Structure formats: C-alpha cells, structure tokens
Image 1 (cartoon, helix red, strand yellow):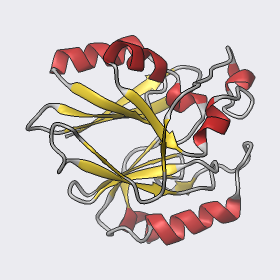
Image 2 (cartoon, helix red, strand yellow):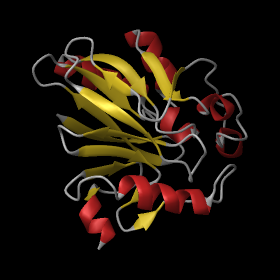
Image 3 (cartoon, helix red, strand yellow):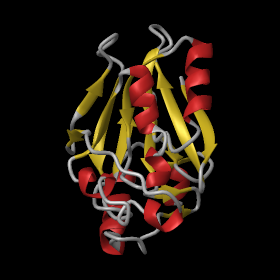
Length: 204
C-alpha cells in the first residue's frame, strides 16, 4: 500500500507511507512537516513504522523526521553523503527559509542497498543513487510494487532543480537517463512536488 500525504511547512511536499498490507508495518518517506498529523494517521491506521527514509537532505523533506523518530523509535536513513546537508542549515536550505533545522544522526545508505521490513523481509526497497538535484539524492525502488520514490530528481513533466548548493545538471541528466529511465516503463514515479507519473510517460 502506498499512501501519499501532502504536508506543508515552508513549502508543500509529498510525504509517502509504504506499508505492507499483511503486517501493517512499513516505511515513511520524506516526512517534511506536520509531525502531529502524520503521527495521528499512523495511529489511526494501526501502522508500525520501522524506518524513516529520506530521499535527500533538504529541510522540506526531513522537517518532521526527528519528531517521528522520537515518537516511534524508528531510525532515520539517508544516503551516506546526506550528513553534509542534514547538519548544515545553509546547505539544507532551512537557514534561508526560517528556523535552522539539522539532523545529527542517520543510518548511511549506499547505491544498491536493500531496505527490508523486519516483519516481512520480502517487503523491501532498493536504494538507487540518483545525484543531480543534490549529491546525496536517492530513489527508493520497489520492483514488486512497480513503484519508485524519486524525491526531487524528476517530476511529472519536468526534471529536478539544480540551482541549489551541490546541484549538478549533468549528473541529474545521467541519473534520469541512466537510472530512472532504466526502470520498467510502467514503474510509477512518486515525487516530492508533483502528481505521480510513470517512467514510460516521462520518456515519451
């Protein structure tokens, strides 16, 4: 089950729950804001969140992560380059938009890693390093569910921005052409700031 929850802090951003129907365990991806509302949704549905997954270290994607970690006891996971952004309010853009936000501790992920539920190891996501929007950007891909959580790498009808610190237009093009477009055409792409789309639709 995939549940999209738009949340609003300084920006509106799409938070996602990726939940195993059988066990009611799962992951929350990019909890950018509104921790109280996200926790209420988790409680109402009887979900157990095992891990908090970040697609990259911008504050609008992690603003509620620490509150969820404290309430749920779930670890925060991000690419191995993410601490550079998570720990620096200038790089994660929070210093430019309001109160400074930082995260001092996260479990490092690398390209090709598998993140599986303890409750059901067959329910898993593969980590794909997709730099360009930021050096630490990743996509979480579920082959079984035909879904990919792409953060700000690609949107419906457009590519991610590269004007922020660490952005690299050439790297972004390589990530989209070489990694995102290498996924099956029917793969649904769930981004941080647009409606879902599909690989085949974006390639056409």
